[in-house]
Image (cartoon, rainbow, N blue to C red; front, top):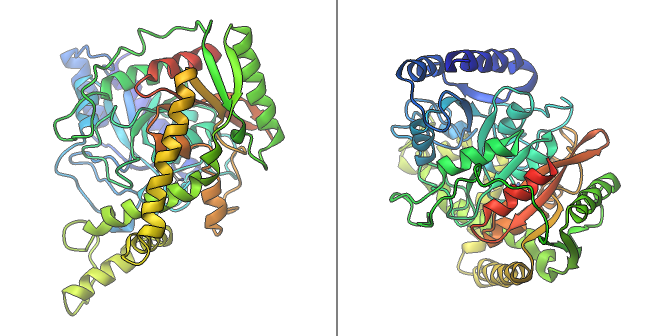
Length: 449
Ligand code: GLN
């Protein structure tokens, strides 16, 4: 097959599903020309000619990038994120920009200014979020792989909900240059695909140090795909008892236990451990993530980018009106929460306290990983919920992230891999690894695939 064939097929599917799935905000209408170019020049990079979908909070030169917000509804970036440059150099085709929760704040894609995406298995259910468009696009076969971002679960939860593989690498593994910032100490770009091999190939391409991002690691990037290995003999797996959260769907538990039994049969050991501070993880995350968001989102003022309010009398009114009209409710909620947590009177009791508990939690996770190679448990407490079910109940939506937040707080690599069905909907097994040991995470997922 030629890249042009693959790209045309992909574009046709995306178009045919537009009404039903709404996976993309913007399709790259130059994708077929890019594909022709790859065919003609015979670029033989590791991803030569493969169409890849990009979450729409990753900036792409000359292709509209909105973060699913009205405030960026017409934003045309003048440069591309490092991850996109790396994909392009490897021969990949940027097929377009996928839907997400506004500024990646959410767990259902329902806060998108461009309307929700839906679950590829059941259109009455959410695809998860915030990378819901990417997950549904992969699950529906529109693309082989998609980039997502994961601040508190936004790759793993939608991957679990759509029955695909998704990995958030170690914090610092992938450059954040050109990624629209939500919470800079937690954000990380990762990959989603049906097959573990495909994500492994893409992650090797996008990982590595970048002079534009001082938090990106200089550690060498392995060829994850070439090193894939299903041997689980002697692998030590820890299962935190706090991951068996009350309210977890019984079929989720059953399937995760089945997966753990499968690992035992493959020669791994599985033992229960405890992460006592996990009970504070959701509170810690929402204080820290909202604080960082309130700071990062100051730049949207109606002057520099995107949406600008009309009929304003002075500069202050321009700021206030542009932000009031440009941001959706969930984003405003986070800005207010974060501004409060950082304010002089509340800083010690909220931001500082949350930062301290984060450190305690990081130590708990890393202590477990001194004795064990991997931590496992469910990716989510339930399968995909119904559209509209939680959208008016922010606390229920936030609690939904309890199992994915730990890996972000500790900066550890973590994946979700399909593991059976609950209510006829996909279940995800979560695999968390040691810092910079994405390979063991890939290998365990590969062994189960
Ligand atoms: N659901 C979480 C939140 O709303 C995580 C989002 C993400 O990982 N981008 O903050």
